[in-house]
Length: 283
Image (cartoon, rainbow, N blue to C red; front, side, top):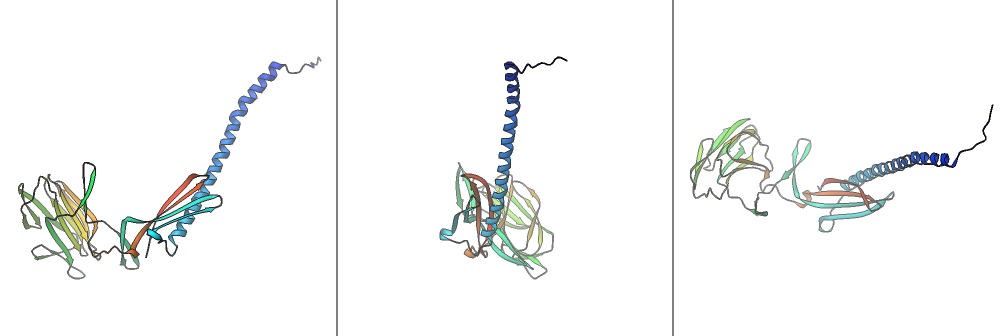
């Protein structure tokens, strides 16, 4: 047998190193990226746990009311920076209502109507052209009270009809269950038709509205604090807009019923990792 003592040539060595480099570079990149992804995932998991911890801590604290009704706290925890803010949320005003063993918080919307013209928003008070009340007569019956103070009893799931008809550009009639009212001196070229339904009863009621194609007709369903009426829109003809979740002045905006928006931001090395938002009810 002939044995060769010949080693690798320079060319073979260079080729081997090149092949090894081609293999090692993507593998090393893969391992570096895997380590980075695992580290980011670990940081995100810890950040989420810290955010939930501080959300709960703030929500269940005795008070978050500070100067100007705003709380701001900056703290550190396990190498993370946690920013806590609790700001009075002006857009959410609530009131408490007892229902059996539960306390229900209901959102209240303003009675102002926002008008947008040429990208400018303005608020104006609403002029109502027709109005109808639903009241409790006793624990089992509701009644409609019309503008002339006449009354009509209604049952569960009964249908109320609202019919708007035009006689001229300045005159319309509004009928509630055939109880007609004439409205004069209305400018239909510039004004909406606004109808107010005051709800202070217990029944579920169906609503049928027949109105004009122009201008639009706004139906404002306004509840009192004790109202349990539920309005189901059964049918509408014409350009009709229904506005719900509006409450009358029996619902007071009291400081001890304010809602605060809590925002927890968790950062590491000046990089935001997670943010959680929650609402806290102040009793």
